[in-house]
Image (cartoon, rainbow, N blue to C red):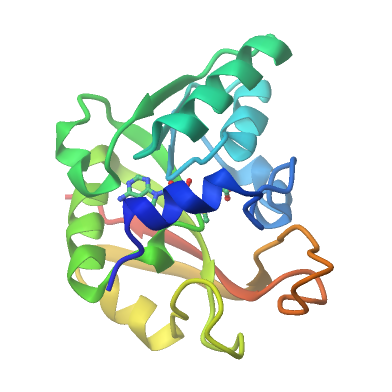
Length: 203
Ligand SMILES: C[S@@+](CC[C@H](N)C(=O)[O-])C[C@H]1O[C@@H](n2cnc3c(N)ncnc32)[C@H](O)[C@@H]1O
C-alpha cells in the first residue's frame, strides 16, 4: 500500500523527521557526479533541490502537496536561488513537458505500493533523457521495525530496474532524519537506506 496524501498532510502539520534543514549527505557526497537539468521527485520543502540550484543546475522540484511546495518556493526567494517548484503527483510524470539529465529521489520511492512503484518507474523513463541517471535514496530492509515507510530490499530494486535500465551501483547508506527525543527509532545517523544509481539505457 502507498502512503497516501492525507498521511503526508498530517505529517506536515507536525515536524516531519525528514525535515533536517539541509541536503541529505548521500547526495552531497556524489554532487560532483550529477549533471545537467535535474528533477527532484517528491522534493518536500526543497533542501536537496535548492542545494543543486545553488550549484548552477536547472532544477525542477515536484511534490503532490501544496504546503511543502510553498515553503520550497519561499526558501528559494529568501536564498536568492532560482528553481522551478510545482505541485504534481509523481505518478503522473507523463504530464511533465520537460526532459531531464538527472532525477533525484530522496524518500519517495519507498512510499509506493508494488503497483505504483512500477508506474512511477515507467514515468521516470519518460522524463529522463536517454543516458540520464536516476539517483535514489530509500529505506532499506536492513532497517529493523515497521515505523516509517516500507523497507525495500536490494532484490526488489534489481527487479524494478531489470528492463531498460542499468543499475550502476547499490550502496548501503543512511536516510538522515531529525532526532526526536520522544522517539528512540532511527539512531546512528538515521534509518538504514540504499543509495542507488541507475542509468536509463539509451534507446
Ligand atoms: C519522506 S518525504 C521526502 C522529502 C524530500 N525529498 C527530502 O528528502 O527531504 C516524501 C515526500 O514525497 C511527497 N510525496 C509522496 N507521495 C507523492 C506523490 N505521489 N507525488 C509527489 N510527491 C509525493 C510527500 O509529500 C513528501 O514531501
